[in-house]
Image (cartoon, rainbow, N blue to C red; front, side, top):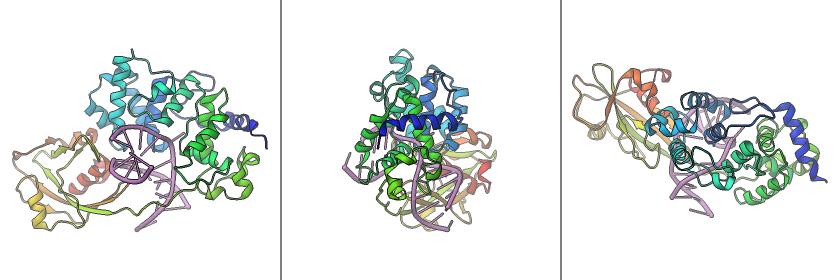
Amino acid sequence: MPATRIPAKLLAWYDVHRRVLPWRVPAGRRADPYRVWLSEIMLQQTTVQAVAAYYRKFLARWPDVKALAAAKEDDVLAAWAGLGYYARARNLHAAARIVARELGGRFPATAEGLRTLPGIGGYTAGAISAIAYDEKQAAMDANAERVIARLYAVTTPMPKAKPELHAHAQALVPLRAGDFAQALMDLGSAICTPKNPACRNCPLKADCLAARRGIQEQVPVKVPRMARPLKRGAAFVARDRTGAVLLVKRPDKGLLASMLQPPLGPWGEKFPSVRAALAQAPFAAKWKKRIGLVRHGFTHFELEMEVYVADVAKRPQTKGKWIAMAKLGDAALPTVMRKVIAQGLSLDKSGV
DNA sequence: AACGCGTGGCA
DNA sequence: TTGCCAAGCGT
């Protein structure tokens, strides 16, 4: 079976079916490396749907790498709040400063050079260099890996199969490297989906070994994930007379690094008793436990929190900052902490 | 080389 | 409701 026609078929399909996305330029136009970079960082493990609004917001506020480098890290984190994987925001800011201050405001033009910037790994380096500079690089995200694994019926389990898949893809990269990378992703997103792939509409059906053998749904081979453990704890929403809420900053490493939250107790197997919870509270007050709880799923564990609320006439001497209700929307609050505050204030999440 | 790291949409 | 999954990276 001649594999040489695969890129041509895929590109022909892409020219007709390519998605219009905020970070994509019309066919034949030169992409701005800053915009490609910004979009690719946001798109890491994140859906197009979720990214679009954040991308527009960032681009309007920080239109080039110099502007982003001049921003305060806390402002970048606040703008990123809700998008998840917050290390990306800190790496984004750090990389912007390196590009602006050490590289004269220009991104490296090769995958190898891009790879040295924080937050840019193998996939993102390949994607930026292909899309913005037309370097002949494969960009192996989960979509590309799935498409290639099926085309060649690679049954080696993931992630062991990654080098093999990359080699197959790299051998296919045509002159239009950027379009090829994006075409693989669009195909994986629209046709070659994880479940119920639309092989009937696939431009590569005749070339697909997995489809020929009827094993397309079993490829790529993945090992089942472990069940996520459940953790429980108490959260403390303190409110002053103006409605301002007490927030503290998380440590700069680990879960939700450098983000804001109401004071929390430690997480364990069980909820603390009311007596134990009061001992965890940031200060003594008439804490009242709200009915119900906040549930939130993280990548590797589930969290349930009971929310305690206190109204204080005078702000007690305690660690943290009191943030006015009107400013909560712009604060560096991750989604789980917005749920906690909403529960504490008995608000809809949209109110925070 | 596994594991830690968010969130929301979907079946 | 629950589990699965997404344009991965850093350590």
